[in-house]
Amino acid sequence: MLITFKCRATPDVVMLENLAQYLVGIVGKRLGERGVITHEELDAAITKLEAAIVTDKQERAEHDGHFHEDEEGHEHHEIPIGLAQRAYPFLDMLREAKKENSDIMWGV
Image (cartoon, rainbow, N blue to C red; front, side, top):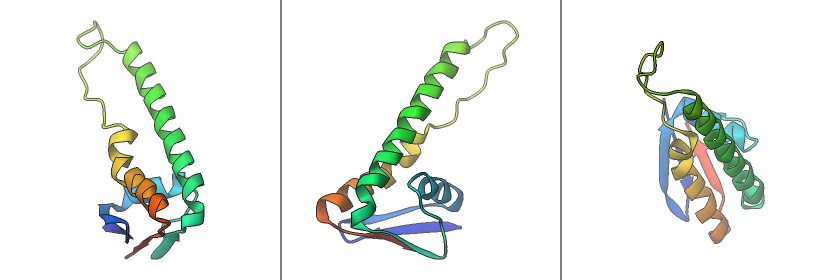
């Protein structure tokens, strides 16, 4: 299922339910049938999401340091897309909403 986040300051952001649930959870919300991140909550939401991205990047860098492609005993595998890439449209929406003092809403 797709979840659409709406904000009058930005175009809609549409993502798969599992990613939406993960990102909304990071910022301290639950993905229900309907929900809102109020403009008063945006500072904390942005801080939490940015911190999660930094942590993800650090963990990915550590993983990359321990894995060498074609190394004896290691099979090639693709490294999944990082949180920064997946979260960017949502983080951008949070930042723009903050600038405009807008709320972000979603609904099924």
